[in-house]
Length: 428
Image 1 (cartoon, rainbow, N blue to C red):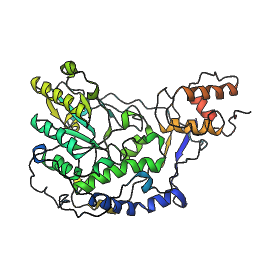
Image 2 (cartoon, rainbow, N blue to C red; image 1 turned 90 degrees about the horizontal axis):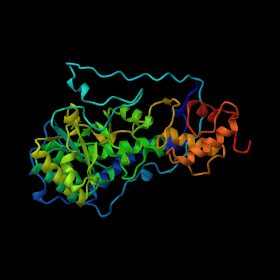
Image 3 (tube, helix red, strand yellow; image 1 turned 60 degrees about the vertical axis):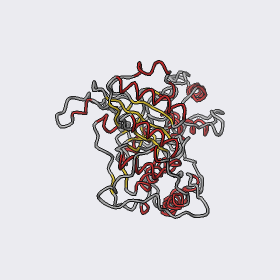
Image 4 (cartoon, helix red, strand yellow; image 1 turned 30 degrees about the vertical axis):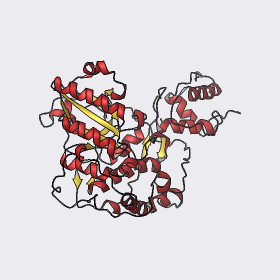
């Protein structure tokens, strides 16, 4: 059974990718400017814990004493990859067979890793786990804060956690990490309070499954570099959270973050933004993960949750603590600005049955191929397998004749024919 080839390194070629990788050193230096040029507005003293000692093991950036420049540089994905080319060729399948899926074995108790039964299992080969809830009876929960839109509002969430003896897991976007005062706050959260900082991509509205390989890697890598820079250390995230949880099952994203040493994708059990005031206590259970955004309404909801959690005897811990991982590693002597962006390694994504609502790069490629053959209009590829894509695929199946029912289902035989050299166009 053939495969769809998704990515091949092209070291011998110039063009978009070579230019982009070649400019990363400049982009990394631009991070210095982007942080140095903003006047650090620290949260008021009653919003955060008092400063503590410098972390041991090396020096780190004193974000309170960075010089101020006249102009501010806003670093975006478009600035990093200045040619703006997000086009991807639709490749025909290679002759290599698609392996039969290997079922994930059920976890068993391991005395050397007692948390093996607490953690979720990957959905299949090549995937990392998606962490939405811990399988535990211990009265522990994890509260996460998404986006972290500014130092002042984030500082109020931090203070609320300190008052309630809770630890937060922060998922700031890289754009927000670069805002005034955030470096100082994140230093205190990580080094002094034991909070956890994870990856929420660089751009707030980022949809990784819509981006080509280089842009996808850049969104993840840039956020990690921004966090590392403000912490003054090479910081290793353990979890990636996708925008609105869309694309959690995108195999390409799993492959890239696995390559970078992540533990998995972070989801949540309950969206705190949707909690009703009188029902907060009903949503408490061991192992739950709660999602909040950094706004006034969610600050009030989080306060209700923390108060009820304390009354019911729950410990509010980080994701690492909930799932039995060590604190995120960091090297205080590393020069993060000298690093090049790691490329996505050579890989193949096998055909698989796509479900309605899937948000994946594979769905994006399927849409591009349908566009190429005339079944979808130009610009339709958004990576979401929905009713329009199913209708276009049904029209393609009708062209295939005997043996192919026009169901609109993206099954493996249909995809093999779609990517074949002799696939019929809409005009055939």
